Amino acid sequence: MGRKLLLEHIDVPGIETFEVYRREGGYRSVEKALKTMSPQEVVEEVQKSALKGRGGAGFPTGMKWSFLAKPEGIPRYLVCNADESEPGTFKDRYLMEKIPHLLIEGMITSSYALGANTSHIYIRGEYMFVLDILEKAIAEAYEKGFLGKNILGSGYDLDLYVSPGGGAYICGEETALLESLEGKRGNPRMKPPFPAVKGLFGCPTVVNNVESIATVVPIINMGADEYLKIGTEKSSGTKLISASGNLVRPGVYEIELGLSVEEFIYGDEWCRGIANGKKIKACIPGGSSVPILPAHLITKTAAGETRYMSYESLSDGGFASGSMLGSGGFIVFDEDQCIVRNTWNFARFYAHESCGQCSPCREGTGWMEKVLYRLEHGQGNMRDIELLEQINKKIEGNTICPLGDAAAWPVAAAIRHFREEFEWHVTNPQEAQTRNYGLLKVTETL
Amino acid sequence: MVSTHELQGAKPPFSDERLKEVQAIISKFPEGRQKSALIRVLHMAEEDFGGWLSQETMDYVASLLDIQPVEVYEVATFYTMFNMEPTGQFVFEVCRTGPCMLVGSDQIIEHIKNRLGITKVGETSADGIFTLKTSECLGACGYAPMLQCGKVFHEHLTPEKVDQLIEDYRAKYAQLKNQN
Image (cartoon, rainbow over all chains, first blue to last red; front, side, top):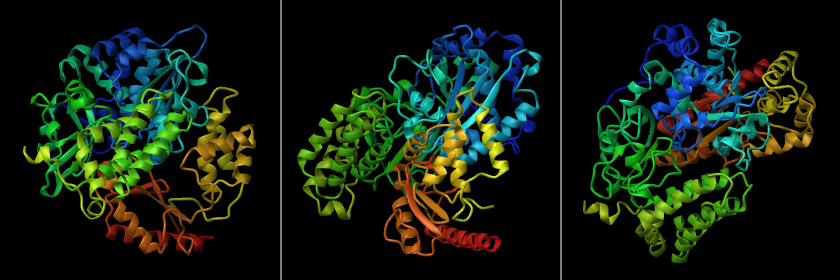
């Protein structure tokens, strides 16, 4: 299970430089694509690989590419979404910081496939130090003839630029990102038209996550057939997982999809178990927006089968007893953590980050934060728990962009699985201020 | 290296060298789309002109990009990284979101408050050197708790590390003062 496609050379000293990256086999996918493949062949290879978008939604990358409109005489753009802001997710930063040329190589190969002659990387403003690393690497790529005019004598031209955001979670939503890249507030656009038809500056645009674009490199190098042999039938390839919370060894890991969740949390090669010898209480496997899983549904599904790190296994049971792989932001909670407090913390995050365009989200996220604050601080009543469920239903599906859903899901899931802990906060307001609830009763009997 | 802005009080215009940088940023975008340079130029303006965006600074940026001042105001106020009021010389932005909270960001925030002698987040220390802010997830969850100061991420924080940081930045401040 230790197969590495993206991070294989991550520990090679100097891998952030062009020279070392090239020596380790870097930029081969650009040579292969530009010299031996047509753009359409590159698109088909990525389609065949069944690569699912690594940003969180899991939409097939190749299919997204195939939707790109190609009217004559109008430029097309590839925009890389490096606005990594989903709580619990820090894999793109790691990749860009440690091995920037991998992203640049992926951008060149992908831009060639899409027929884009100008491409942009939009990076969150807080990663300004990573922007410096990327710009340095881009300058090297220009110098070595991998960017600019007539790349490798193929007649293909590409300019690649990096632009920072200003601190707004919402700009990770692709149409908000495009607004921001045009120098505006990050308010998501109504769809349709989709970016594939009308995106950056009104031109056809593909927006892909950093990891998705980087993964194009091994797909082109090894070919889709070889790539499909890695992972599971429905989840091909490898995935970067950002592990955080109460773990012995948090960090970024590249896993082959299909690794068991138990092995990932407790295995020596990975997170090495829960810190300080404590028990696990809960886990959010795919970034703060996906449903939280209580201890008894983390390593096993509701049907008692082994749970794996894959799109299909993590979502087994739907929202009733499953979750999602999402962005791979894997957050682990030990027995001393308070679920009400954590749910309030995330509600505060979404209230802070709502762009304010749609009333259900603008008002609803604020209400949820206030109600959860009451519950957490011993001022809530039973009616508040119902109220949260009602607000939830009124946000979900009623907003222009998915932030509304992303704000509603974690609250709904926390109440679904940890209702007894919410009720305990209401019935024991004094005690709830002095100690945490601990594990669920159902867990204690395991 | 100074990790945040130059000493307080600097005002527009940009130096010739910085103006060249602005032109280079504008040239990345199609003709007539110079507004795309706005966010990056605002970051530069904040760095050069006292660490915050005064109306004078924003109006200057509007004139540089040939857009209406209101187009700058609405963007500056939307994005949380921009300071709309003067701050201390160094701004500590402590991440307060879930994964950081799980491993003790609340305690780090309390510790900084005590050390700087301030009562709540958002305040500046009496000597004008530090402002304490909190921030939503900064993408360092595996290296939590953490804070950002300027471009630098300080990770795996403990109360002892925070004390050392405050000392280091105080020394930097003294150095800056001597230079000016």
